[in-house]
Length: 499
Image (cartoon, rainbow, N blue to C red; front, side, top):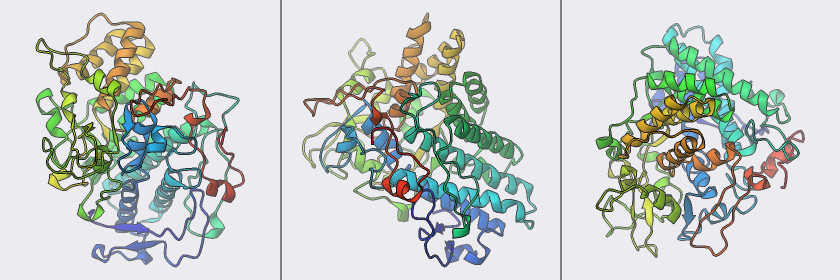
């Protein structure tokens, strides 16, 4: 549990765009922190508590506790639903309205806007906390709030809006509503329309550059921890956002800055072990869970991905293994073999046969297998340093910088136990970069968004169904529906096409 446990009252907000009901206090703060709600955002401790509240919210099932990873995998072409609990079946079949919450359940939209409002309140309050004279701490607080707001807005854009450069103009309803001022009471509520896609990206860029500048002035602060927003995490995120924005020079620049940071790529021999450690050594931003924050047997990533309790032990059944790799994904992991016919790719070791305790056994993902042996309790790596290499490789390939793109591709290949590739150019080079991205981030929630940002069709190969439900890029299901509650509250917001 974080040093200061901070809970924001849900009574204040009923939808992502902020409907206010009766609420006596904005904050309930754990008494152990010695910060009460009267001093909520007027002290350094209160601001830290506010940040902790955002990290807590990111742990929710609707965000990085499950959906930003598992739902994104279910929608894409890496995974098949096993129907062992019934969860994620509709998402895996791409049923209209079953993505990141449903049409009637606010899900990710609401959780993200709650957290954005918290970041706004912190940034609004920070200049007035004159007693905070530690400039490192002040800059770290600002940097973390800006980083988190950028992450959340980009996640909303990835889910609910078309990505720059591949917009289907006749179907597009714009980006998402931009709220950059915090709401404390009913008189402060506004009901903005969806901002243009370019405007939302401008705001995200501004937050990320501001975050990088703030962290650059806060050496030695808690903003350097991977369980907090930090400089290296902001740089990798900026490279990601720029890649989505088809701004390849900016992607290269920020990826290069991140690669020069303190978190390094794991050596080949320790990569798999890093997923068994309490904290993944490749994480530049990771959500830390403690025992009271265990999501449990229904929705945790471990129970979602595997029936196993421990690596290599098929005698004990824990979770459901609702979402497992399909044959096509495993075939890609096993495509390159040694002379004995064994897969060269060490990432294949993170997928193993589950138990029969919930029915038929499947090969399952074991990236989230219980930190310190505690079932359903894993830290969640949100951003890993390997992304910086693959972001830079793809951006350089798009810029025609073939040698640089190939060099980064080979860094990932050799770390993964694969031989270097030589002579790749053009589409062959780009396709291998995208293939390595698929394998590197399998079951970490990238694949759906990577296909979407490139305007590619989603071709499903699901052996458990007789009619795989492909999703052409021009299908309306490429975007998630805006929740009905939001539409009824904010009349300025237009629903996505097709819903």
